[in-house]
Length: 404
Image 1 (cartoon, rainbow, N blue to C red):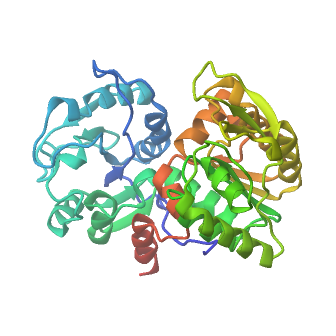
Image 2 (cartoon, rainbow, N blue to C red):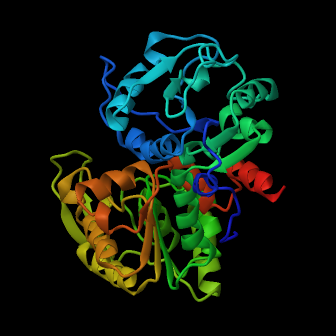
């Protein structure tokens, strides 16, 4: 995994005064949650997209912005697929009108764009050929602009017409500040990390994280597993896990990962105590037990205080921490102490920390440590695929264009 990715940055072009009067097409990630009435309930992604747009406006560009929203059927626009609420919020955040343009692929309504103007192009996923990365659609999009800017890390793992195809055909293709910051942070954490490198990979299922666990087993000094994943690892070392969530068919895979780590002198810390309950519910009674005392009718729903303290010490000694997933059912406070202890250890650590994934972001918000995490990734799937060492198509095309 390369620490250094070479690509043209939007800021490079601004420094060269290359945006003045130019048509700039920004692919942002404005896929925000809405309520049944179509009101935006959480606008983090819109706010995160503002710096790129503002920078292009200040540099004298004619700015077009687009994004996907939800999962529309290609070729069939429905009112609930519209970016209209996003256009309204973007206008408020930019302090200038942002007009929403329909049926824009062939350039309709884009002829008279002025320098400093911002328009929002309707939901890009309504266009036929977007998801299949159609060259025909990508060429039409590329013809609309002088400069293409990808600022949507959350979709970088997908090769689509607006994230990959257009970058092949646009006269200039660059990374926006959000995408560049993600790649810089991930490169720092995984390409040339300060040691020890510690990863926390947690969640309900080993199967959904197996390829990440295998990829990290070759790289990290400590691999902390949590949640349902930890149960499978506990079973792999012969511990009774009662009626806890487990994947019996992956016990051998868990053993193999422990062995890979051990051969390198690295470790997968196995819990020494756990928090159990007889049922999974918000009102379930939590009982702390040594791992040897787990009963057949127990469900393990968190790591215990001794384990949490040991893991917090490892975090304190780390040079780099990569965090994906809470280590217990932190939504219920009585099973949240393990995640809280590790979250606070990360917050107080001198290590460079990078965190990603929806549940991880929820834990960061719950324990109010966002200011103390080195970098919080906005892309769930893209973050995980980068951790696996996979090539992200939307990033690969930018590096190819920069090499020409």
